[in-house]
Image (tube, rainbow, N blue to C red):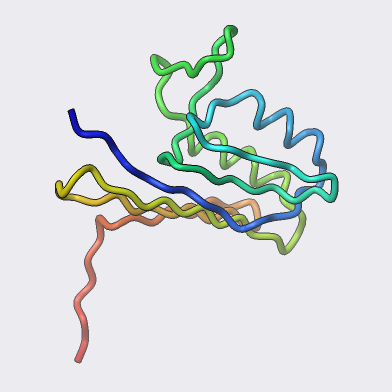
Amino acid sequence: MATLQAATTSTGAIVSDPQAVRELCESYCFGTLNWEVTDDGELTIWGYDDFEVYETRENGLPDYDGGIVTHEFLRELATHLEAGEELDIQTAGFTKCRFPVLAKRYVVRDDTVLHADLSGLEPIDG
């Protein structure tokens, strides 16, 4: 069985209410990823896994049956970022030498969530 090998990291972003963001993060499962909200209110996310967010079951485990709720989590998080702050989350990974490789990015800023991956192609103008 092939295993995904991935790494995720983010920039730090200052949140308006650190305790509310801690509670928000605690209500979701990030797999083996880590998150931290410092006493100064800076949120960061990192670890060796894909950035996928699930709701948490009562026993603290991810609710895989409910599906991935990454976009919902990020939209809610967007309302907590300080004005002018930006959280940039990037994931890269692979499963052996199989196609395609995993590369995705989420940017949260100005109450907006942006997403990018390797699915689009644009012509190179010469």
